[in-house]
Image 1: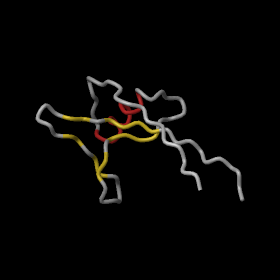
Image 2: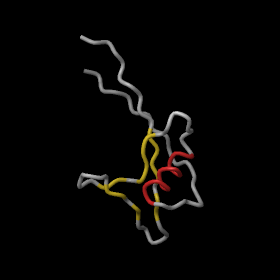
Image 3: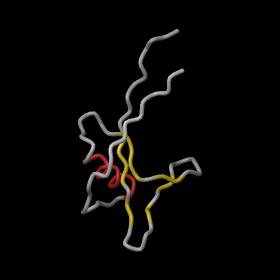
Image 4: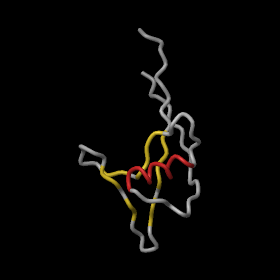
Length: 79
């Protein structure tokens, strides 16, 4: 049995909503699934600028008002 530790993947996502109660979702390429815009945090990035970069890459736009909402930490399941 291997004792190798799974690599840590850091991600950041943006919750973009309107005053009318609508939320912007993007469809992941090649799947039927919709999700918040975002992606992996690059090695040289901190979590806050990562969603801004992802929004520019995925949607071609910038967000002028952003604030951190939460920071969950998910641990691998024990077997």
